[in-house]
Length: 504
Image 1 (tube, helix red, strand yellow):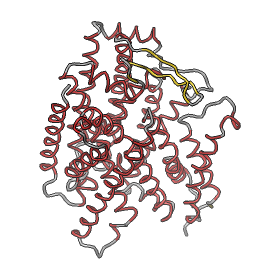
Image 2: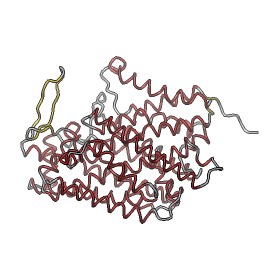
Image 3: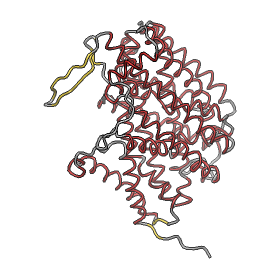
Image 4: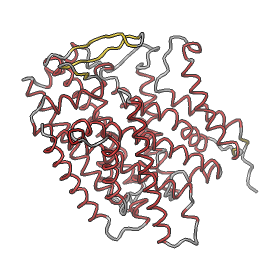
C-alpha cells in the first residue's frame, strides 16, 4: 500500500475537519469553548461521545487483547452499564442543580477550596497521562505505516498531529468538538464494520460459523469464574462500573459535553443511549479481534515462546513479524487487505485518534483556566484577556502532550489499554473517594488535610500491588485497584472529618 496515497487521504480528512471547525466556531466565545453555550443537541453528543469513549486504543487494543483474554473485556462492559445508569441518575442531577461549568466546583461547594483544587489537579494529571497514552498508540501506527517512509522523525509526526488538533479546536472548543466527534465516530464505526465484513468474505464464512470456530479455539470465552484470577467476572463487572463512574462521570472532558446539553432530561437520554450503543460496539470490536486471530492463523500465524532475560515470552508471529496485542490489527489491515480497505482503516484509526486527543486538550484547558487559575472569579479581567489566557493554556497543554507522547515512545508497552486502565486506577481513585464522601455523607472535612489523604491513598495502593503476593497470596489484584484506591481515600477523609455543625 503506497504511503503517499495513504497520506493524501489523511490530508483530505483533515481538510474536512477544518471546514466543520470553521463553520461551527463562527461567533464563538469562552462559553462556546467551555460548555458549547449549553445548547448542544443530545443525540449528536451521545453519538460523538462513542468516539471519545473508545479512542484509538479501543480500536486497536481491544481486538488485539482477544488472543490472551478472549472476550473477558465484555465483563467490564456489563459494569459500564451500571456505571452509566449511576451517572445519569446520581451525578448529572447534581451537576445540573449546581449549574456547573467545571464539575470540580462541586467539591468546593461541598468540601472546601483545597478539596476542589485537589480534585481538579488529579483530573489534570490523569487525563494528561491517559490521553497521551491513547495518542501515542495511534501516532506510532501512523508513523510506521506512512511517515517513516518519508524519513519524518516520530517527534515531528506527533507535532504535526497536535498542530492539526490545535487548528480546529483553538476557537470553537466544545462547540466544535460536538460536531467533529460525530463525524469522526461515523468514520470509525464504518471502518470497524468494513473490516469485519472483509475478513468474513476473505475466509468465506458466515458470522455464526466464525463465532463457532472462535469458540473452539478459545477466543470467545466471556465469563471467567476463578475468584483468584484478575479476570474473575465479579471483579471485572465491579471494576467496569467504577471505571465508568470515574472516567466518565467524574471526568471534566466527558462531563463538559454532557452538561453542554440544554436540559437534564436530554443529558440523561444522552448517557443511557451512549451506554446501550457502546455495549454493541464493544461486542463488535471483540468479534473483530476473534476474526483477526482466526484469519491470521489461516495465513500461517502461530505462537512462538522464547526465553528473554530469564523469562518466557510468548509472541504471536505472522510471516516473521511480531503480531501480538496492539500490532495485529494494523499488520492485517495494511499488509493483508486490499488498498481500499487499508485506506478505510487509516481513516477510521485517525477518527479514533482525534476525539480522544481534541476533547482532552480542550477539557484540560477548561479545567486549568476555571479550576486552577480561577478565571471565572477574576472579575477584573476582560473577555479578551480571558480568551488570550485560555489560548495560551491551550498551547501549553499541546506542548505537554508532545513531551508525554515521546516518553511513552521510549517505554513502548505492548498493550496500551492495560497502561491506560492502570493509570486510571491510581489517578481516578482519589476522585472516586472525594465525590463519594461528598455525596453519601454529611460530614465536613478538615480541608487542609485533604491533599495529603489523596496522595497517600495511591501510594498505599502502589505498595499493595507491589507486594500483593506477600499480602494476599495467590489472589490477583486487577482493575479493582481503582475501588481500593477510592475506598482508602474515603476512609482517610473520614479520619480527617467531623460531623457537620447544625445550622442555627
